[in-house]
Amino acid sequence: MTLGFIVYNILMSKTVFITGASSGIGKAIAIYLHEKQYKVYGTSRNPDRVKDIPFELVKLDVLDVTSIQNAVDYVVEKEGRIDVLINNAGKGITGPIEDTPVAEMKSNFDTNLFGPIEVMKAVLPYMRKIQSGKIINVTSIAGYMGLPFRGVYSASKGALELITEAMSMEVKGFGVQIVNVAPGDFATNIAAGRYHTPVFETSAYKEKYAENLALMDEHVDSGADPIIMAKAIHAIIESKKTKIHYKVGGFMEKFSIILKRALPDRVYEKLLMNHYKL
Image (cartoon, rainbow, N blue to C red; front, side, top):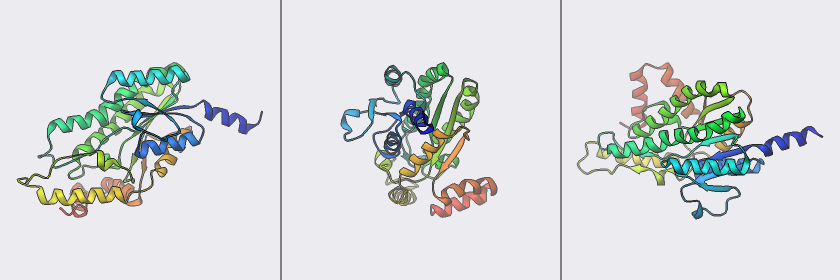
């Protein structure tokens, strides 16, 4: 038996479960891992609407605990295990904090924080059973700083980063590794799925918010190829020793995190304000 044959079979035995795999970064990751011979199961709220994908899509809504459990049970029943969970499902939100309805803020946290927690809670019993597993939470570089007009999104992704730090220590004794991967701007359709607080005519933030909405969309449109994220995720899956935090993005995106740690608060704030023309 050759070494290549052994490695091939190890790869074939790995079952990967990816939430939010019908488009964007999630779809790119799922296709890439499928091509690398993993057994890939993606999820979507409406899998019947998605065509021409090489992996199986399972119905799952991160806001519905029963839906989550049914999807996880289905994959385990078919494969006997889940080796890798990639918590990718999420949604954007923009708006001045003062103008954004609290109900929309709570909805964003339900999708970006509590949804991933519920998926982890559904998968962890199976990983504990086999004393092995890897959980990869897709967060955002925006989660490392409070960005103007994206404060709720920054907060929800930053909260998931901290939850991951805590859970990493809690699950380590069961042979489970848990990490964050924070992407920068990638060319996806995330802008179409965002909740945009309306630009109210009477808002004190009307002009600056309108300008920044256009700037945000421009950043997404000119973003990097999602295949970069797919390759980074693949490398993490294959790594025996993982970090807790990974950043995947342009030089300035990653450097902005270093600057925040190094500079006085108000100096860093001024840099951000200049960038966002505030």
